[in-house]
Image (cartoon, rainbow, N blue to C red; front, side, top):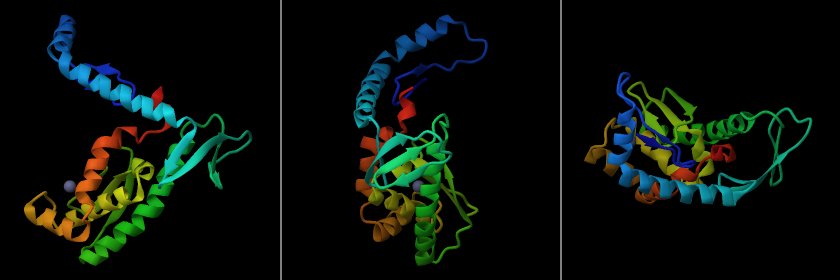
Length: 204
Ligand SMILES: [Zn+2]
């Protein structure tokens, strides 16, 4: 059972041969949980709608402007010029922004910790802001670009500390808190606001 955090679309997943009536039963069984998620989604949607044609990128509010004839996204002052009819162009540009800023930050954190870093990659997860593998690859969600810079920096430190401790042990948390004292605030910020870190098209 999933409720989209912006549109409120409810998805029920059942085993292949489950009777259709099972959908009703599942909805009934989880109705309180669904109602709570729907009201959260309505609040998130209202926030995203209130932004209108504005998008905050690394803490700077930019205006999204479609410009006929344009092939690629281009920032001019506080305007972000978008190519018409290319719905993926904005996400691609944001991924580039994420890579350009998060890669050197991660490299610097890894160097401070004295740990090898294999590579930094950028994904599009909605709730998993970063991850780190045993092979020292760190992946971030490009959506961090839409969060305040200090929140993104806290995620960088979180993942970099996994290069030393690939777990959430007390050793991991004490290492992280030593390097990034705003960890708890950043987690709280993402819990409260993470669902709003979406592009206008998420409104459907
Ligand atoms: Zn972690």
